[in-house]
Image (cartoon, rainbow, N blue to C red; front, side, top):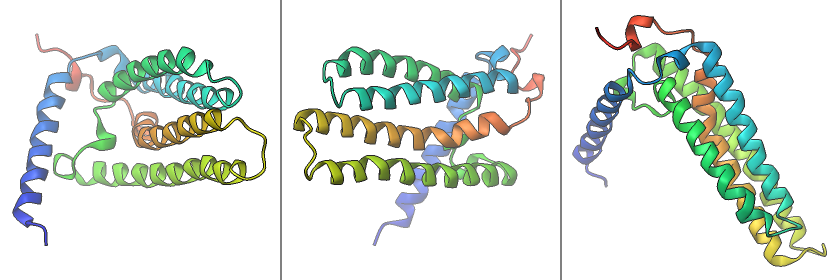
Length: 182
């Protein structure tokens, strides 16, 4: 049986770390915290994720595409994702104790959708692997790399969905909440 005190201490550590980071990044990128700008970041992030999936599909026939496109596309995605996390206040992965009741409800709803998306998107490459493992005339190393990229992309999409939903749907914050003090 797990030590309940250990779990409580870990949750308290997560809450304190989250609040410390929230305070640190609170004043970063104030012009990008509007709903319109967050939506631009969400669309850009979705386009990068689609690009990562496309690299996975293309790498099925051309393995050289993988390092040439996957690495730069991943770096661009990570930069966009970091900005989106900062301007949305990291609400998608915030610990329960750091949120109020309405924020918890919104976060849990977005996480539920994220889990469904993860399951559906991961099912596709898994099904492809089962089918392609049979009779298809596909070069096996390319199949493994391609399916691996698609599974990784599906998992990353599922992890991104809660923050993307919250960034898209939340109204503009009060300007006093993120402006640098005078």
